[in-house]
Length: 460
RNA sequence: GGCCUGGUGGCAGAGUGGUCAUGCAGCGGCCUGCAAAGCCGUGAACGCCGGUUCGAUUCCGACCCAGGCCUCCA
Image 1 (cartoon, rainbow, N blue to C red):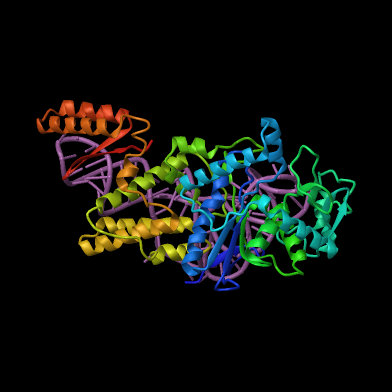
Image 2 (image 1 turned 60 degrees about the vertical axis):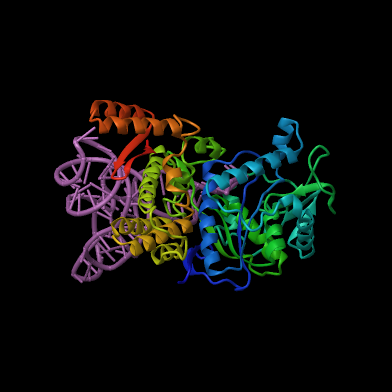
């Protein structure tokens, strides 16, 4: 099955073939760790994590890197505000990031390069760019000379002239050309800095990705991913630096960009303040429903983040886990991914289509009569779910979610359910219904089955 | 202002030049002490105006609307 991906470079879907079968490289722009991330920041890691799993099935030699940017002016500011060293900031929020991603079912990347661990590579890249005339030093800064790279603007489809025409940025006096951007900048004594040929300083804000990609993968990587809002200037500048530092060799063969998460039709962003932190959202909703919500639209489309969306996802998972619960008596293990799911994912990571395929499998499984079919379809459901990072928990855990931390506790729920069952058997339906109502008020729903009653946490 | 996306049924959301998305919700039925779950059945859509076509939601053009980038941003 061929894998087709929308390449932002060409603006069309292209068949993906790695440059080397024995080493396939994928890089995702990771977080700058100066604060807790919001749920919008999780969309890329979630969908590109699905891509990493997909790629690994096709190319076991995949190496997937997602960086941590741990040197940045916002980090410096946070450290100053809190009177702590920057490592206290970056350590805390790196750890929080890992925890929150894990909660959302995001796999760890194979490599998690840190910018501060690549300062020598960053300096070396700056030197190389200066030697080849693509960069220049000025007043303790090193700047990239945009005019020296003919294809600048190719990814984001904009020309330097256009940008200068609409520029709202004040042009620093040491820049030769207004579009030039900083590779290295001087640090005052109180700021973190490293010794360099241009004095004590720190990297600019694009060079670290170029340096880390080079360190991990060499001149040209297969796939580079990130949010659409990074396309310009971040990715454009990465391309310029890397291509010029590598004698004109391409930087990334495929560029993938995820769409933004919206709140009331507007992009969720820290600067607008319309954000939900992941830890806040996790406190109110099942993590798996959040993950499903992030995959409910195609990754390139904008996605409106609402309570209604999450509740719908909870119900969808109720349905899937209900099917799995009804299949509890047959054995099944995760195996090869069902063709309908795999082909949807191979079609530019069409997760809504994959979810529709999963629904079809679930419907078939519910109707299957014999053990062999039920086992086969259960395996298909679990395997298709695995491809998406869904449906891997025990159905009982899903349906009992949160009862220990928040509500009555499973033991007292069990006791009430048993009491109702006794009332039912005594044909005291008034008493039985009163207990059912009492539980319903606590968000617990009872289902009677031929095997006896069972309960679940109700969708809101 | 420049560049770029997108507008699909009650909601979410794929997709396609010519019977079907799918999920959630709704409605009718079966089942149930009553419910829930499940099953069966069911209505409902392609922003607007033109063009191409035997036929367009799908292709082309204009328009309207929404959003993104141009400044930190996933």
